[in-house]
Amino acid sequence: MNYNDQTKLTEILAAYPWLPEELIRLDSRFKIVNTPIGKMMIKKATVTDLSEKSGLPTEELLKRLQEMVDKHNKAQ
Image (cartoon, rainbow, N blue to C red; front, side, top):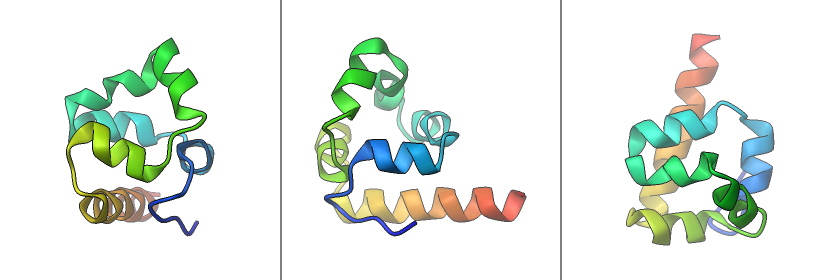
């Protein structure tokens, strides 16, 4: 999957349903992803929005997302 700073989180999570747990390991602030409010917020959120909430620069977050996907793909 190709994604960028404007990709909706729902698209990424649909492609990688295991990703919320990895995000939580990256930063505990991502625990909100698994809450009812977080699930509602994700419907409109983009990678940029996630970057702003986490404090990680967008490019760094994109890099880390790719690393997580690559690691997961290698493990399978």
